[in-house]
Image 1: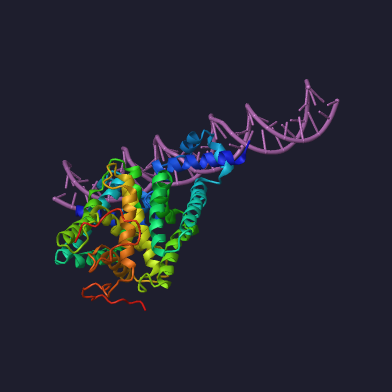
Image 2: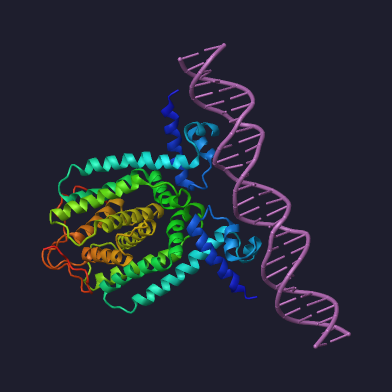
Length: 212
Length: 212
DNA sequence: AATTAAAGAATGAACGGTCATTCATAAATT
DNA sequence: AATTTATGAATGACCGTTCATTCTTTAATT
């Protein structure tokens, strides 16, 4: 019997069950049932329940990073790259909805119950964005004062939250592609070097930055 | 003995415990201990564990909405309003870190185990943003083609994700105020009507701008 | 090629620990 | 002393994990 056969079956079942019930409410027996496998069999392939979740993080995000990177590396223009990132992220969520739900929820939760685990894959994914922004800055296309470390989180957060609520509400006022386009448009014209000095917002900046 | 006394004590204890352990890993006895109350006492004030969480959602978000609205209503310029929203949101997270952690995590998770519960308070909070954007559009300050329903999620997501990661990482490369400023700047110059036709992004823009 | 033995996979009932919740009792308040 | 409020030990459901047993595949022997 092929080893990987059941491994994959269990992972796919777990993604569905976790997506539906959340990690804590999901029972091993649910996963076993969906994978058409005995409860005990799961422990031949995974150490425990957490281990299944971590494996999902590692293996599945890994695949996504690979896909997105390949797609982005075909481009040279940072503006296009950012737009493609937005679109690919949203498409991924649409096509792999269950996985997206698991990642969105448990990624946030995971710090609480898996203290030791540092999700390097997720960091790697975010860094796709900051690298694009730095490239744009080197090319003098994006403003210098944009902090890549902030912008990457902002960009990701904007996409992910929009997608999350899109998944939740049954009546979609917008398509996921429209949302991707809107967000990348806002961000791009938000970080591009302006033709004139219009980048400053005409407001009283009472709040001083403490940072350097 | 004042009724509200213990009610409040339990809520405040629960916020701390939920923040630290997450809803599922938190034990009632933990909350009781922190509130200096017997386990059973909690059930005199709340129906069950979920009920505590829901009460946190309702009461605490309610307070926040009130504060933010009051602060924003002092302004007329939608640009300033958006900037204030960003700053207030971030300040709130800094000042009420435990509450912020609970909201960030459990808000996402909650759909899974509390099927029936619709978080109207959260929707109300988001709508502060869409209302600002609509106002800006009416005043011809913000672009017409920006969808308020998308932009509000994007704005909130950008702020919240940035704040989330700021909470997680101990070494802050940026202050929370810097992040707020960065994000509101990006969004503002992203949605403002451009002084000239520089809103065009050099990509296939099927969606035309209707604004002047 | 048929038979037997050994190894590897899979099973699912049973175990055991963990809490959320209850409730008989006690303390405080009126 | 009646009533309200609080206590915390006891209850019992729940479910992750284990493991004795069965089934399947592979290898060895006749």
